[in-house]
Image 1 (cartoon, helix red, strand yellow):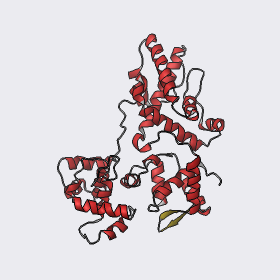
Image 2: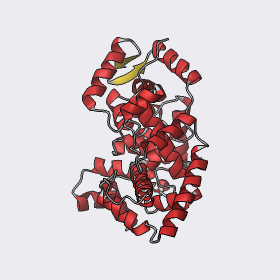
Image 3: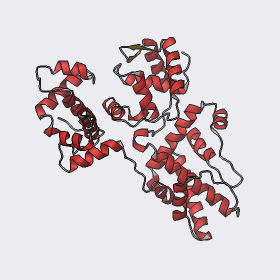
Image 4: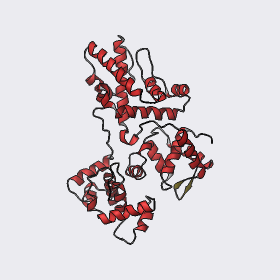
Length: 355
């Protein structure tokens, strides 16, 4: 079977995980990392945090054309605004899974934008260290981000001896960490770095050298950065590059405001009035909070018996579709869509417990 372009293949794998219950647009929001209550709900319910923010640069017009091509080639279909993966699509996924060597870490949900800042700090630190030790003080920094440059000034070794020692230590630390990755992934990291008489290569150059698509190069490079970030405590420099980064700054800004009201003891209706928002919006916020906080007082909204009932039907029917679950629990008329969403969100957390 002919291989698909890398990002189309990732889309197809994600489509299979969504169990024919979400729209094509919902998958786009996951892959590009749109931070909304609905997207957060989707990635938790379907356990697809791995795919979050995998291709943040994927333009919507390109996405629409590529998914249309996949429909024309019968990898996927659409029914009632839900994406359906065909037998041809499932066969394609199975072939890919058998052959592909996954990187040890990729978590756009956990590391999100923090990985980009971490890499900028690390790459700029290496470049400046290399140029300075070579006696060159006139060079263009690889990143002109003011906050990154301020971090560099704060963490810059003051003496020439300190610079030499830091360079020696960082070389060994990076070498040891990168040896734990596939050679190609380590190659991507090392060849994106600039230094004295050395310019980091473009994605096109790396793609040609590795005979790998630019999309896959970006993905595997970012996975390597996630690995370095995850193991930053093994390096005196990398741990400083990771310092202060909000690794799990998950909630949307508007939900954070609702959370502050909730922590002050305000009820949902009070919060809706205070924030001049619809009750449905506040419900979205509470569902988002429940998906992230194990301390969320779900018992104040859904009894333990009702939680068990909802989870029983979700497992038995193997679905997260609200309409299907609402019909299943219909004898319990007091259980509305909000109760179902809240329960699924709470028990869909990464640290979920048992009802």
